[in-house]
Amino acid sequence: MLITRRSTLRMGAAAAGVLAMPGVLRAQSAAGTRPSITVAVQKIANSNTLDVLREQSNVGERIFFSSMWEGLIGRDLRNNLARIPMLATEWKRVDATTLDVTLRQGVRFHNGEEMTADDVVFTFSREKMFGDTEAKNRSTIRQEGLGLFTVRPGKELPPQVPATARNAFPDLIAVEAIDRYTVRFINGSPDVTLEGRLSRFGANITSRKGWEDAPSYLDWARKPVTTAPYQVAEFVPDSKLVLVAFDGYWGGVPPLAQITFVEVPEVASRVNGLLSGEYQFACDVPPDLIPEIESNAAFEVQGGTILNHRLTVFDKNHAQLANPLVRRALTHAIDRQAIVDSLWAGRTVVPAGLQWPYYDAMFHADWTVPEFNPELAMSLLKEAGYKGDAIPYRLLNNYYTNQNATAQVLIEMWKAVGLNVELTTLENWGQILEPGETRAIRDWSNSAPFNDPVSSLVAQHGPNGGQQQWGEYTNAELNQLSELLETSTDMDARRKAFRRMLEIAEREDPAYTVLHQNATFTAKPKSIQWTAAPAFAMDFGPGAIAL
Image (cartoon, rainbow, N blue to C red):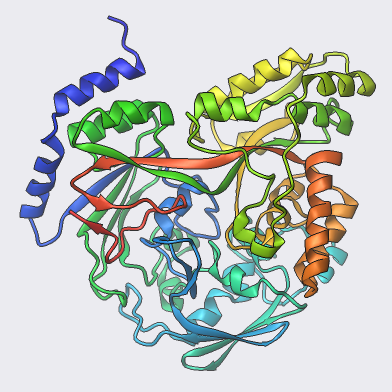
């Protein structure tokens, strides 16, 4: 008998039966006052740390938000991701560069210490976040030729930490304690997005004492002391993460005694483990497997589209991609709707470029991704003088749902217009981003950590964004517009600047092309009352789950 992904799943479903999962949960519940769960994920953390500034990833967001880390301003994971009070009860603008934040009183860290303004000031300090002791604004940094990944001598932070911090807070001059429960954020330039920046992934509060008590950065980064409903009991990189309830949690008693995240790279293994009762949740389920799972009446699949888009990204320094006409041809050769219909069963959409309606007044509803036009693609290649030379495409092995299948479809679509794209599968992000002759095309995704294009197009593709810092792309006009978007308080001017940036980055001098809005699907027993968030994050806090 030929063992396929589908036949394996059928055997797992048959072996499990409709009562296998509830039986496991009852056994666990009998052992204590609260149940424990195991969540099968594709990856826990790419960096093998639990530091929100070091692990800026889709997989990190899944375990960090709600369960492990909290910020001053939260996102409503149970509704529409709107900003909500979290470790802060209120915030008030003093002027265009200054924001006062009132802290929630009585919040305890996992070490029992009360959270005060001192901890917030420390979290955003030069030492903890930026790896230096002297405040420098964005202009000074550029004049001194300091890249985002520059680490100051004598500091022990890995370069990715200050890089993320400088990207997330490019002009933060000072954070001051007004009193025990009031903090003032002072920016070096006007910033209409400061509240949004404080709600983003990476602006989460840590204990000063927890940091000082840790023997090294790595010791702290693998067991950070935070305020969240669960705390780290065990972390085995590339294997598992065990979180246990923190009963001193300010938001109420956590509903679970323990959450164990286990790495299970193969989707069939994740699903079979769910059906057999080994796991209570199986993440990143491809849409084509949803009917198979739900054919067993005891199980269901939760999820849908999220604030994340899947992209194909270009290195314009590669010899075959230096001419923007070739990159434009790559964008016009893609039938995005065919990918959505065939690989995603119509469960996601082709969006209006790198933006979301979540942007409110900044959203351009009439914008579109490059049209699928093979004739135009062939014409552009002819005009560019493209001779059929190989264009490398670096790929991870299904880090993203349907990643391999999507890459194979793209290869065929590009081949149909005369593009010779060669696929190379690599093991990790370091290999994907390593400079060299084979870096030309790669996969990526972009999220919107808050409701402004500064959080996506500027943060990911502007002068402080990963793509430019990794040396793949630059555009002088786009960079000037990025600074306008970050510093102007004129909303009409900001909106016009954003549209021009879309024209540059998606049409004239493509940095990337959006494939589709991302979607994430999680399988679980129906006996578990839990609803997936419109994000990668999984909420297991008080009131979010019942068994």
